[in-house]
Length: 295
Ligand SMILES: C[S@@+](CC[C@H](N)C(=O)[O-])C[C@H]1O[C@@H](n2cnc3c(N)ncnc32)[C@H](O)[C@@H]1O
Image (tube, rainbow, N blue to C red):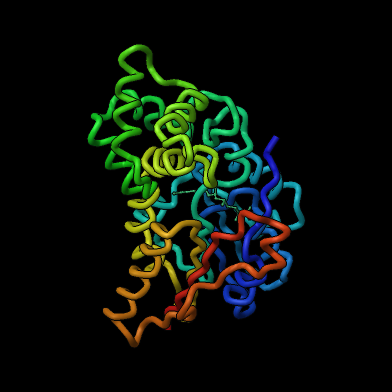
């Protein structure tokens, strides 16, 4: 069963990306298809292609598309958008990326994305290839682990946590979410252990980003996504933490600075969720949408 995912910044995405009729639309992060089907319902879509590297999202999406009234104009591919842009020759009027993991991942009892659920530490969005989080934890050198927690999690106790991991794994491999959660918890001084965010939050985020190579793929894909825009086409990217948003902001600015006649940044500041949206969906609190247009 694909777990429900509430789409973030849906109104803002529609306002910026459904900017004309007869759109060829690409959704590079299909997920539960929330944005994708809302866009289709607008009546402004001529064709809709969805991508997702997660096989469960893909299978669920394929079924939903086939059962929908849009089956003749809608399509989905099981692919990483980083690979897609390398060979892509198609052009689109609207491209949306809602980067990162879905609630389906966090709420899954098997995938190991959340320290709130006991599971094997896997964390791969594409479960058909690549190293699991537990492989990474049990093989990287202490300084590599510390650097990962620091750079991808902005974790200030990165060295202490890495040292504890190396000490623990000498006895037994670290396999379960609860084992990693406990290591992080005990690495924090007593007076900080019960503060928010939970001591394991940043380490889990860092491991997930590392396992899925999220930041490199995002950065390397943006030029290809811009190439895939038709004249007058728009690219909107939603990010969920400062590391991603920085990449989107700098990549858009670079494209604009390299060719000011070709690009316009439509969001001088990122669009964020209204108080009303945050109260209904707390996950939207950290979402930021930036949109660029090709002239
Ligand atoms: C936040 S969810 C998207 C939710 C969707 N917009 C909705 O409203 O239902 C992100 C999805 O993108 C997928 N994803 C993340 N990075 C990807 C990548 N590099 N290539 C393809 N899919 C990716 C994840 O597997 C996940 O299903």
